Each structure stands twice: as structure tokens, then as C-alpha cells.
Image (cartoon, helix red, strand yellow):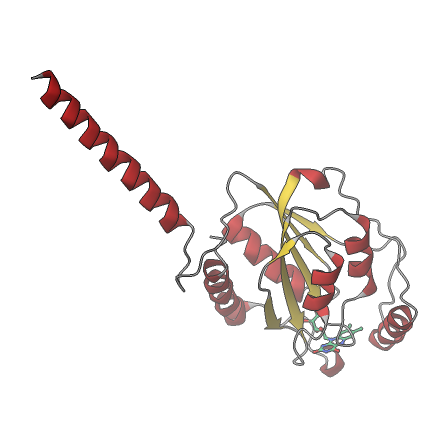
Length: 212
Ligand SMILES: Cc1cc2nc3c(=O)[nH]c(=O)nc-3n(C[C@H](O)[C@H](O)[C@H](O)COP(=O)(O)O)c2cc1C
């Protein structure tokens, strides 16, 4: 009788342990069947730089799906309101690798382990304010997820710059989306139906990279 009881108990334990291992393994495989790292019990930061609101909209849509803190990267000095002037100033800053000072300071940066970084394409690269941001913090051991909006020419060097700048971080596959075309007078483009479409794209991307 006691032997039988022990056997039943052992069988239950085997079923529970096997089931548990199967469940853990399932949680780490995304829709492509690839192993991914799930962020569990971690704090999420979503930072973005945005002039005409497109990258900000994407940041807000990401926040709606993953929660976390939303923070705008803002420079200490005002930027030119005029488009042509901004194009010129940005070009000079990029050529000389200048780092504009930031108004934005994140005092509890160390407490975040998952950081989304959003930036528009400027002159096929990052606005230098985002380079300042990357330069200011210690990304070691964190998971960094880039996203981008652009006027139709893609992310350019923005993702590779984020990868280079976020030293020691695990950088996941980014999402690049068509935003505005200020040069043609189109400022905020991610609105209405386009916003709904973008939200679905974000959902697919987050699932693919194992962040949902
Ligand atoms: C100074 C400046 C430079 C830009 N350079 C590019 C570029 O090289 N390639 C591109 O596709 N779009 C370029 N754009 C367009 C922006 O990437 C696009 O409008 C983006 O969606 C803006 O994001 P935002 O609304 O968050 O500011 C540029 C815009 C500005 C203001």
C-alpha cells in the first residue's frame, strides 16, 4: 500500500516538472520558432526624438502595447522652427560630430532593463541629440529596441548607430516606418487610418521579436 502511494506521488511529480519545463520553453519561442529572450518583471522605457510628431505617435502606440515610461529626448537649446534651417544645422552637427546638450535627464535610468529608442532619419542618420542620449547612459546588460520614422528613404544608419552607441546592450531587430515628408509639406502622417495600420505593424513586430 505504501509502495503504491509512493509510486503515485512520483508520477504526479514527473508530470508537474515536465509540464513546467514545457511551459517555460514555449514562452521562449516566438512565432518563427526561434528562441528569444522574454523580458519578465522588468521596467520599460520608451524614449523618442521627434520634430513633427511621427516618431512620437509610434512611441505612444508602442507604449499602448507594452506599457512603460514614455520620455521625449529634448535639447537644452531650442531647435530651428524653419525646416531648411534645421536641415542645415543638423548637417553641420553631424559633420562635426557635435553633441547638443539635452534638457531631458533620466535619473533612474539604471532601473530600466528594456529600452525602446525611437528616432527619425535625418540626413540618412540619427539626429545628433539621439547620439548625445546614447553617449550619456550606461546600456550594459540592457535590452535595446530601436524604431524609426522617415520620409521614404528608410532608416539609413540610424539602427547601426544605435547598436554602436548602446554599448554592452542586446539590441533587437528594429522597426522602420514611413512618416512625414516635411520637404513636401507633409508633417504628421501617422494619424487616422494610417495610425491603425501602424498599430497592427507594431503588434506583428513586437510578437516577432518576443516582446509581447
Ligand atoms: C532635418 C531633417 C532631415 C531629414 N532627412 C531625411 C532623410 O535623410 N531621409 C528620409 O527619408 N527622411 C528624412 N527626413 C524626414 C523625416 O525623417 C520624417 O519626416 C520623419 O517621419 C520625421 O519624424 P518626426 O515627425 O518624429 O519628427 C528629414 C527630416 C528633417 C527635419
